[in-house]
Amino acid sequence: MLSYADASGYAGFNMPEIAIVGRSNVGKSSFINLLADNKKLAKTSSTPGRTRLVNFFEFVAKDQNDEKKFMLVDLPGYGFAKAGHAEQNRWKDMIEGYLNKTTNLKAVILLVDIRHEPTIQDLQMFDYLFRCNIATTIVATKLDKVSRAEAARNKVSIAAKFKVGIDNVFLTSSEKKIGKEPLIDRIWQFVEGNDNENLGD
Image (cartoon, rainbow, N blue to C red; front, side):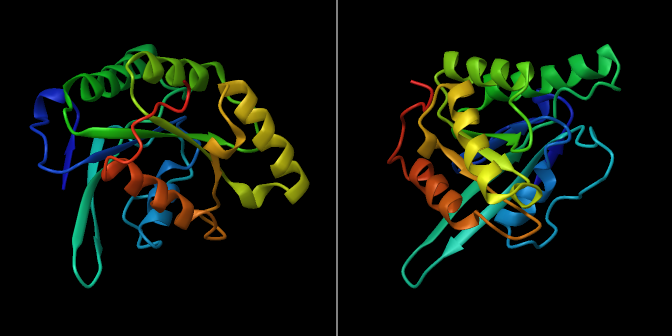
């Protein structure tokens, strides 16, 4: 629906927004495509740091009696070591610019890689969202890259690092198409205003 490189280009949409943040190599585009039934809504790349805009995607759910919509907001990835300081600062400004300007944001989905412990940047982002009183859900991507036992251990570790309950960490694999339905249910809770609690509280 819209892409911009500066928050001044954002005028808002008359619908709820769910934003996605995460490190530049965490698989944000693949995660978006998973939510979109793998329709290749977002462009994927083997090169980290390719998302250099704030991108807005309209999601629509229909049933016999109703039509529900929300805007999925893809924020630039952070923590890409090869990006220069100026570029990293520009991405930071885009993320903070959006978060400071939006009036429709219902929640943020923070993506982490299940194979690794959350980075300092991940923890800083979660703390920033908590201090802004923004409801945040943790999603661990790339579930297909680890064994079932390792996934269970790492889920506990991720929950402990973020100081959230284990049930507040969702596991997904875009490759194996795992984890979409629980997340869609979670998103609708936020969109419909049934869950306003910050999960870090």
